[in-house]
Length: 216
Image 1: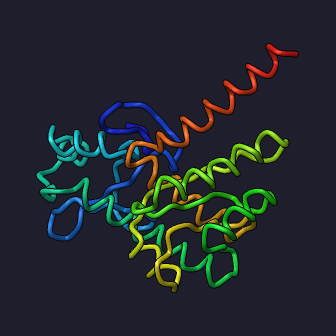
Image 2 (image 1 turned 135 degrees about the vertical axis):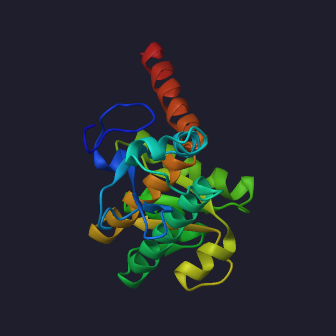
Image 3 (image 1 turned 30 degrees about the horizontal axis):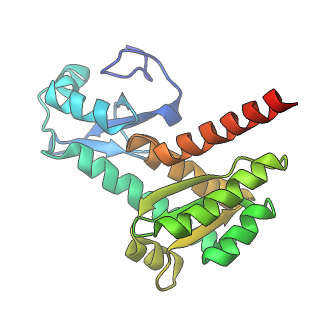
């Protein structure tokens, strides 16, 4: 079996599209999020559905050709690791000065094309999210980048990672530090099934563009 073949789908993929697992000294299956643990590994598509399926169908034992212990909530364990890794990178981006906090500053960073992506706390109000979403759409219409938004963390989690209080909206700014944290956010978002709000936003932009072309 190819070293980067998903044990569920049997399809090859790039490392960023997969999660590596190894077997620990106690025969337990261990997620290797950073892909640096020693030993023979196996790979699973990087989303909760496939990891839960691998655990339920005992595919890890087949992949490792040995009796292994699968933690009872392996999918939740992976989610927690991805979340902590993403929040840790977010904290580093704050130290690098690559963060804008608060609805006003986030909207300004979006309209100025400075934002790489936006984070909303899970408690964010519809009105606050709507205003920033309007700024994101306006930026695209003016020829700027499509700035995606994620709602992955609670207010408490964002506040702790960013060293603030009551952090509801944040923008990660373009640059090396921003791109490093974006990679982790994309991985966590993909693992949880994607962001339907972003898909809806991009679809709305496309529909509006089509309508404008029809009127020309």
